[in-house]
Image (cartoon, rainbow, N blue to C red; front, side, top):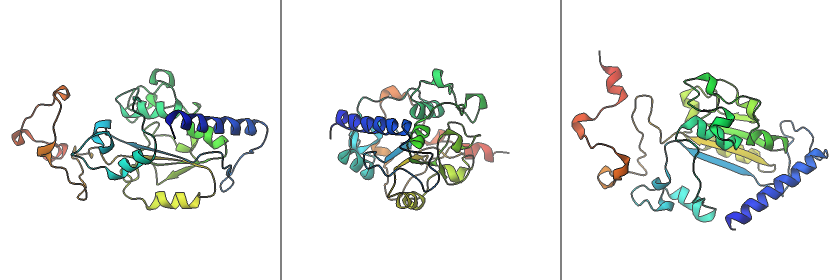
Length: 246
């Protein structure tokens, strides 16, 4: 299916369901009472911190192995002219779920640093629209749009995991909880937002590497426009070293 056909089909299904909703076809859905309309697509939105398009095999990277993402690209649709509205976490995420620029939705900076940057609960979001259409809307992993307020205020019926301010709950460390959600909702419409932080440095500034997908630093070519100085091991440092100093 071409990208244009996919968007046309999906948009038509949502518009049709919205018309049915306004006519009373879908009443307020409580837990376990969701739409089973086969014309509505189930939606899984996957995001990953600190991952650029050139970090994926499906876009030509031969040094970093991403077989599962490559399979998604091969069997689905690749958007080759899509760009984030901001090179910062919270504004980008807020724009994705509101469809608005940061200066419109108000999220113009990192929300854990300044609470006033948080997305206000009265803003319409993709999860809230889908919730009204009978979807079971859920989020797992990072919640950086308004971390001091509950996700339920923004249209998510479920928060898979605990409070977003807990480091353990912001990291998706396995697939058990995801698979359980998919099995539980196999007969109804659902929207699942998976926000991975695995590429992000930890609180000490260190990176995590998977033994199953080793990366040889010697083979990584850094483009000149990255403007990263090659300081060598003599200047290697991390926040762990800084915090350990007396």
